[in-house]
Length: 329
Image 1: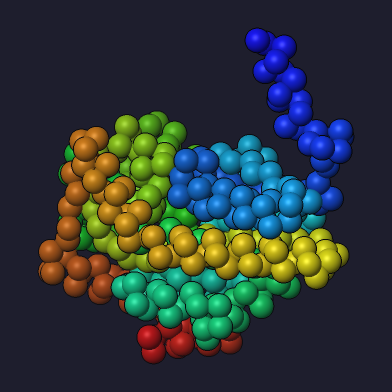
Image 2: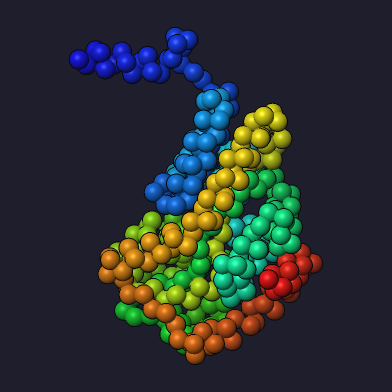
């Protein structure tokens, strides 16, 4: 029986040709989140479509949970060609393209309609950013929705800016750091893959992240309260090394581009449901979900005003261009 099973497996592997089919092209993708996260599942959708449409001539290998590179290392790794593709938080490009932090301007893109307009490939916000990122040696293939930014804490919610006084806060963008400072807290930039241990060790008192990340990283094990500030729109981007991309055949690029568009549309359309499920699972695991009052939200928005000024002061013409475009949505 074992010999029969082994023979069947070998026949499946080699096919009718009698030789194992080797892919003509391999795409390695670095991902900081676990494969079970919605970003991981989105990459899996992309992988399956590419491999199917190419009849196995293109192989996609996904290295999740920061096996190869941490989130902050992805831009340099992809831009240099050390790896073909990678997933990075949009804000990881802030060093080269400061204007990307327009998505983290507090309460600027504060509902789904505005976000969808901003992330449309030909929008006056996204298109200039994609073009600027291309100058780093990486071509944007698609954007991955991650939902709104929330705050995590232990022992109770964060009731307005006063609740941050004297608190160390995990942030994942420069603009968030400016926001926390303006609100009276002490920001600490910590990679997504390192936030669990930071909460566990008490390196920070409060965390800023996306609700879907609470679920995929099981952050209810180290934090017990969610405050739904929804102060920013969190976006990840999937990038490919530009030289590598330009070296592909038209047929290969067509297969990959089509799969990328399908993956982007799928995750964007499912984001509301993904977040809702994450909230339910967090509650099921003992977390308290706190929705700020109207007075508290007014105080948050007031605290955020200096952040806009700082953003415009250091992002130049591109920052002004995308900020003004976002304001019109």
